Every structure is written in structure tokens, then in C-alpha cells.
Length: 346
Image 1 (cartoon, rainbow, N blue to C red):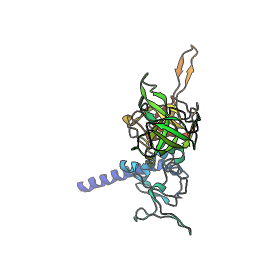
Image 2 (image 1 turned 180 degrees about the vertical axis):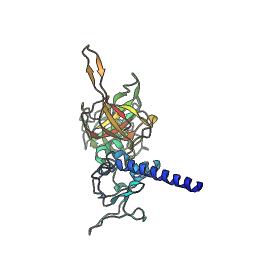
Image 3 (image 1 turned 45 degrees about the horizontal axis):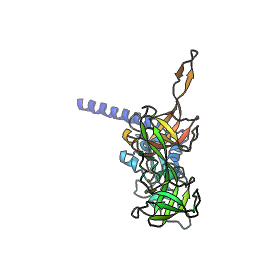
Image 4 (image 1 turned 90 degrees about the horizontal axis):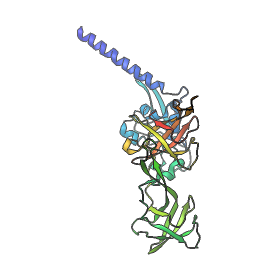
């Protein structure tokens, strides 16, 4: 009899835990979330998560991802069918055909290419961040001092643009044929630790391809994002970093700030790229989602500047991480965002 009572208590406790887990899981769903969704070209993990969840960064919870799967989530392609299933233990998302070991794809009578890993949908819009995935962005002081540099154009022009022939000094023959052009930029300073320089931003100017290696090499400018001038430096083109991390919140507290915005605008909104004063050393990784909090002050009747309570103003998605800084895309903004606004674990 005693064993029966113990077994009954254990079963009731298990059901209570399962019910609590189901309730918590279901609370993150949007009230209008679909039970079935067909992926279309242009979708991202973030946009699909936003169709199902109130908090899109909780996407891994509903898929049941472990930590390694967050870094290498299911590859999802246009035509795939995502199913929302409610069970006694909660709600989950899965690809149709996952449990049978096959991928369900909606076919139509037309010629189609074989899918490759690069055809999978990205975490966030690739067009918004692609240039940043191939640019160093953050450098050490004077790290470009000994890099190859532009001497002049073959036409004697002061400014080089796309299609210009450029003469380059100091170009090595063993670093490849494609290069990127940079100019040293501003120091990135930590507003919370006065005087601490986190790195130096390199200004991306364009791309170039080698025509002839020599003491003075010849190159063709294949892309010019800005005017390229005498003295601008070159670095080998790196491999592209693929943007395939699932959106997820850090599992530890993050307290940082926006220290810069790419492009020099004063008010930041959805789609802008911002620099954070936290990086790998602080545990940040690609795919982390952070909440933005607006920092505001007001003058008291006595003339003192008082700090108002921080108000949540949006979300950022971290897509490139260096040791002390990270770059993030603003994926949501409910009010204007400014530099020095706080970022925290949502």
C-alpha cells in the first residue's frame, strides 16, 4: 500500500511539472500563430520565429534545440513545411517529414537546381549584413601601418572608383588575388570605463583584384563603397562567415551599451548596424538577441540632471563578434534609439 501511495504521489508530481512546462511553453506563442507554414524565398529564421512566437529569440526552446544545435540549427529551405504541434508536454515546431527522416518539399512542374547548404535561409537578412561578414571592421592600433597601400591610379586620378586601375606598393604574391581596401577609422571607446579603447574601426572602401604582381603591382578596383585615395591600405579578402545561428537569448546576464552606429546617423532604427561594447571576452556569440533600453535624463527643479528609469526601445541580433566589441542588427525598434543606450539580456 505504501509503495502504491508513493507511486501515485510521484505520478501526480510528474503531471504537475509537465502541465507547468506546457503552460510556460504555450505562453510564448502568438495568439494568431499558424499551425502550418510553408517557407518562401526571402524568409529568415527571425521572420519565421516572429510569426509563431511573441518573443522570437525563444525559437530554440520550441524546436527543442540543445546548445550545439543553436550554433548549427536545422537547415530550412524555401518550400519546406513547418508544423506547430501541441502535446501534453507543451508545444513544439518541426519540419514536416523530420520524424520520418525525409524532407517534405512542395514541388511544382519546373526545372529546379539541387539545393545546397548555402541555399538555406539565414538567421537575419543576408543583404543587410553580407558586407559586414567579409570585413575585419575592428583592428588593433597601427595594424594597417605595414599593409600594402595605394600609390596612384594608372590614369593619374586623385580619386579611384570602380573599374579604375590602381598601382599598389608592397603587395605580396602569396596572399591571393582578391583584396579589400580600408582606411583606419575612429577609436572605439568604452563609455563605462573612461579612457579604455576597445579597438579601432576600419573603414571599408572597396574590393580589388590583382592584374599583375610586381615591385609595383597593378590591380583593378572591382567595388568602391567610398572614394579610394592614395595611401589607403589593402588586406586579403577573408572567407565569408555564414550567418546560420538560431536567434537565442544569452543564458547569463549581459549589461552593455551601444557605442557606435555604422553610417554615422544620430537616431538609430530598425535595419541599422550598431557596435556594442561587449564581445567574445564577455561571452557574446553570433545569434545572441539583446534588448535595448533607452537612457534618458531630465533636469530637476534644482537644476540637477536626474537619470530616468530605462525604457525598452527595441531588440538587436548579434551577427559578428570580436574580442571586446560586437556588431548587431537592430531587428525591432519601438522608439528612436541612440548611442549610449543600454543593451541587456531580454
